[in-house]
Image 1 (cartoon, rainbow, N blue to C red):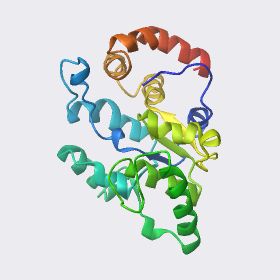
Image 2: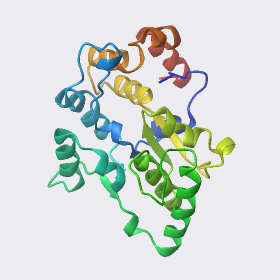
Image 3: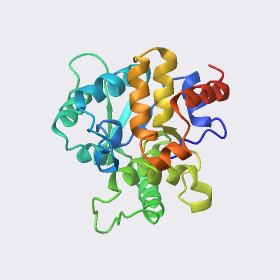
Image 4: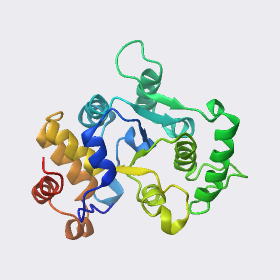
Length: 232
């Protein structure tokens, strides 16, 4: 995943101004990363990922939403239990569950059209309803149908469906992305998570491999350049 700091991200700027907007998230928001195949000594535990990332970011972004197709992808037992508790909370923060069955006939027609357009640039085949890329396709189609704007993911292929919407013709031109490194920076500037823990997460996600160390900024450089971009 490339840390692109060439220009401010319009979507992130909007969230900084108003963090109470609805943000639809991909499954990787809840699933602890495992990059052991790329040389990491260990994978993240869910407890650590929840403490460092999920819970503090949900406090800062209280209106998170997850599509039912993404919910089905969260098979890690701890993550699944956490999401279930937040979808139907007895108290505290709630995650909104996006269900296609809740759409009006007019919205469903728009959703179906957008799904076909989006799927053409993924491995998902609506006629087969296969699992490959299913969650992001259905999330983005739903968002386009109801007018939700912000989509958060750490999957470059999912993000490009929005960020390259005009060139690809995915019909998602009105959507905006929130990238995980922006979430890390948001947590840092709000003092919501310990700086050392965020440094560790950034290094694990973006500065682990030899290629990433050559391509992406170091932690210190990242913080300084984000400060310059967003004046925080």
